[in-house]
Length: 178
Image (tube, rainbow, N blue to C red; front, side, top):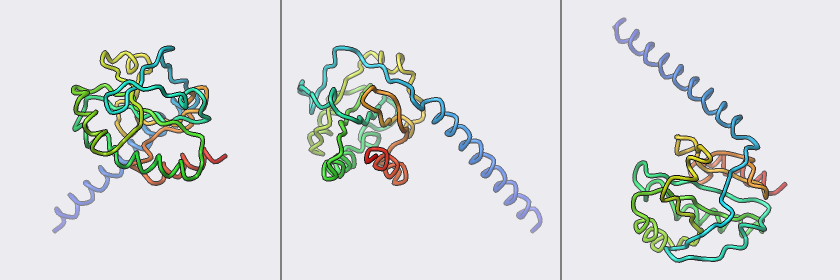
């Protein structure tokens, strides 16, 4: 019985240490990205459901939400396009001046385009087929930390994925309502 208690205690200590270590890592990441400018090319070519599109809101919006999608994992799991569409509807209903866009570095852009059609997602997407934007901005490896709330000058105000975490969503909404 003592062995079981000892193992349970060790497991709990490892879990707490890992959580504390992870928390410090995330805190450091957030601090490093605060006010950092996301560098984007002068000539942007957006696509919606695979078609080139003009996206003037990108240049005039007070805020932008950038969601970076890379090749790791399942594209449909990573994109969560339906949830993004719901968030966009919510901010539209609150009349917040925000432009949404994705930067995608995926293996199959056709799969992303099909997912956009299925989910009726009209959020514009920049295709980063060479990984240039990823290298230029050095986006974090953690997929949960690859979403940014940017100001009009493309400086990071907040980091974290608002469709995966309701607390982060609230922070985004509070910041945009200031």
